[in-house]
Image (cartoon, rainbow, N blue to C red; front, side, top):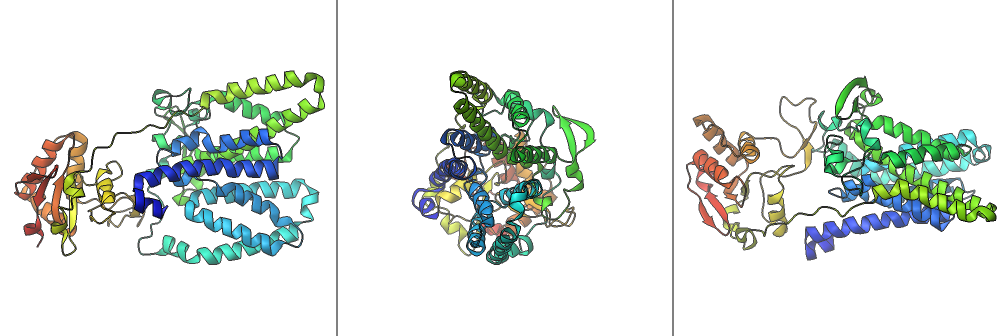
Amino acid sequence: MTPVTLLFGPRASFLIFLTVGMIATAAAWYFVLSRVLIGSRGPAWLGAGFCAFAPAMVSHANGHPNIVSQFVVPLIIWRTLRLGEPGRWLRNGVLLALVIVWQAFLNLEILLMTAIGLGVIIAVLAVGRADLRSRARTFLAGLAVAAGVAGLLLAYPLYVQFFGPDAYSGLSRLIRGYSSDLASFVAYSRESLAGSARTAAGLAKNPTEENSFFGWALLVLVIALVWWLRRSIVVLALAALGLLFAVLSLGREVRFNNRGTGVPGPWAALENLPILHSVVPTRWALAITPIIGLLLAYGAERARELAGAHPAARGQIRFVTATVLTMALLPIVPTPLPVAHLDPVPSFVTSGAWRPYVAGGRSVVTLPLPDTTYAEPLRWSAATRLDMPLARGYFLGPDTRPNADPPKVALFGATPRPTSSFFATIRRTGAVPPITPQSRVRAVDDLRYWRAGVVILGPHEHEAALRRGMTELTGIQPVFTGGVWVWDVRSLTD
């Protein structure tokens, strides 16, 4: 996407990444379902459509294009199933390694869930089907090649991620508390036809994590499909895997209807383990989406076979199938994603008027400072192709504060400074906290820490309070120019 970003900007790049990623996910699932797993176009179309546009996927489309771009997952499944081909263990192992590396650079969390899911399914098939055990040696040889090649190609990137200078050790306890509410499995997400912000209120931590909102109609259908197809070991394995992911997604304590039950979840015993301590527990429910997609495809294929085997009842079978699928899937048809109007980037930014202030390695401090809930300054910097250096931002980095528990746990954004917290309070409340001589000293210290050359304030609902707070902290009167208030703080930070 780099050429698109450079030519047309990050918004165009984001929209193309998101749109093409979801389309490619549907296409990849259709390919694997129609050519490898089932062989029929109709059932494959149904399963692929669900895998790409289920409520959880639409929910993440609000902000996580790398999570909804799951087009490599079906390719990993396809290449894993080919490992048992006689005489082709080397070639198939290398091809599997390449798609694993591809997915690792898209999203490691999805890769982990895919690996666990495939491991469970293959273990069940190895136990339940004797014809597959004869291919075990070839399969294991190809798997060893895949592990070796992928490990070699990913060795340095993974070393930097887990042991590099900016590596972090697991997510904070707050984020690790993002779990699925038990009631959410029968609820409808806010981006579903039958859902709204009211139906989803309190059942998910935020609109992008509605991973388990399948709705009661679809849940009833899935249970019925598992019972109907219970003679298939693949269906039973998928059902067991889906149940496992659902239980893990409940987190350290089971919650029902936004209330703690006091019942500990199995995740409580796993959340502090290496690797797993970086998983957001509710996202285990996201892994249920392709499982349900596969069950829908297998169910539709079975209905198609019944219709073919009973010509006299073909019309009735098709009518019942279409009715059941409509009742279960119509309520979760996705609605258009919400959009927001973006104010024009101030001319102080677009004209380059900030450049003299950042000479000598200085930075621009914006009010409020950017973080996870206020990213407007990042858009301004993006408009300059990241030439405008900002203090703070939105990213994952280690918490280096002395009182961090545990040490170097992941922090969303830079470590808070007294002055960044001061203006975050104004942003939330609209009120200026008490200003003392000590807070003025800390403000100068923070400006020096950020190597600030200029402080700017653009349009904001609490603009007056933010302007008064900075003026009283620094004693510098701002100048309004280029659509922003400007404090030249170089005299304080020299």
